[in-house]
Image (cartoon, rainbow, N blue to C red; front, side, top):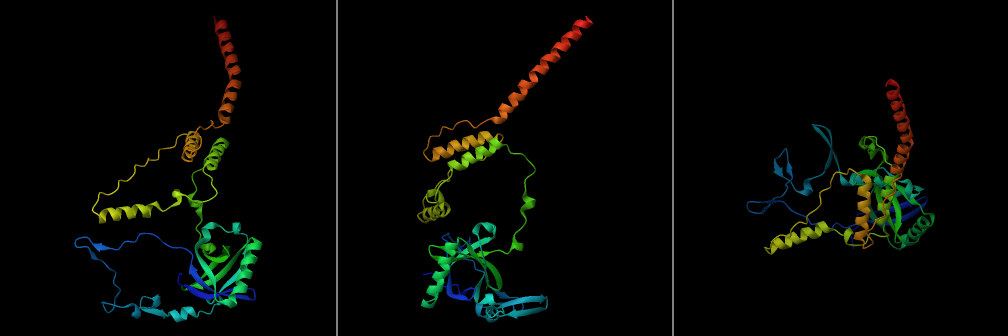
Length: 303
């Protein structure tokens, strides 16, 4: 069982739910250490006091706030735990809102909130069922690691999940990233929707959603351990410059269908723009004929 990260309570009006916080995710990445290439000796980071010019142990290290270059205010872990804030001891629910009212960019890492003992069982289940029936999520405040945070509470498989949330003023304005002004035709939008439809699915199960990078790294390590030739990297197609969006969309739909074992034949995308162009050209033709007659008349008159 994962270790408890934090203990406290969920405060829901006058209802208190004692809980333990546990990480909801696991990191399966392959980790590397730093080594001296000449003799493969381990390279480590040492913590050295700048004033005494000696390495210090973790027991000698604490936190401090630099007020000036010559004055540092020490802050102990005990003082951080006893901050004069209600959120230092509890996850204080402030409001209930629809999930789609929250920008996903605000939502961060998730943690499981486990009920702390039998006394917490009933109020915990009450909050789970109330959240489920309301189809809303709770927005709360809590204080961890020296700062107050905003959090989102939701239910997953009858367990309450706490997601870290960024404060609204921590989200950068993306306006500076907007592309130059351009127009997209209705036919191109329909083509993109057709491609999205061929790529739609009900779940995220399958080899395309597995960690291929970690698997490839494990194969390299195994090959080097056994002194075998390293596996060759597959050739990847270099993305070309898109000149015709409709042609690219049509080909993409065909490839997406073929990858799913469906009929790869794709009906030609509607070309309303082409029809409009030909209609305009047809209207202009009589004008050209009239101009030709006038020119012929002028030549006859001058003769």
